[in-house]
Amino acid sequence: MDFVSAHGGLIPASAMGTSAQSLPDDLDQFSHPLVVRAKLEIAAACHAFGKVASHCVVTEFKNAAVLEAAARRASRAFGFGRMWSIHPDQIRPILAAFAPDEVEVERASQIVCAAFAADWAPISMGDALHDRASYRFFWQTLVRAHQTAKLHPDDPAQQFFRS
Image (cartoon, rainbow, N blue to C red; front, top):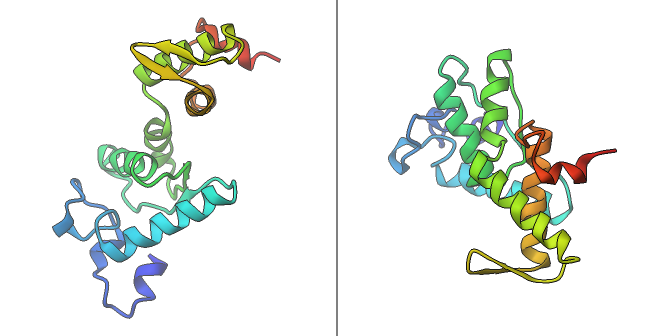
């Protein structure tokens, strides 16, 4: 909201919020070109310096589905690892949006466990080659799953999170 208001009224108020679809003509915070550019630059700078990019507040809190879609877009399309909330009703939809889904967690667990069993040598799984670069990606998925309680207690990858 500060970014939009700092442009002297030349960015529409719609860019302070989020629409249900975030289509280009909506000019909301996920489709207005200047706001999108700022989000991408912030996320890229954070990643370049090893920081967690934290997405700004989304003012929607009455419609959990719209909020969750906005949080998912912030995470998946813009590379944010966290998101601010301004109302208690926003917390669960944000957590749900930032958590990996069951299929992602299962795949990550299979690949990381197979890599560990192979002493981190390259492996083939599902007709795809995996090596340290993909292991790092799937490890990060497991960490997110663990942090958001999406890693099932019986999952073999739990071995990596026991103290």
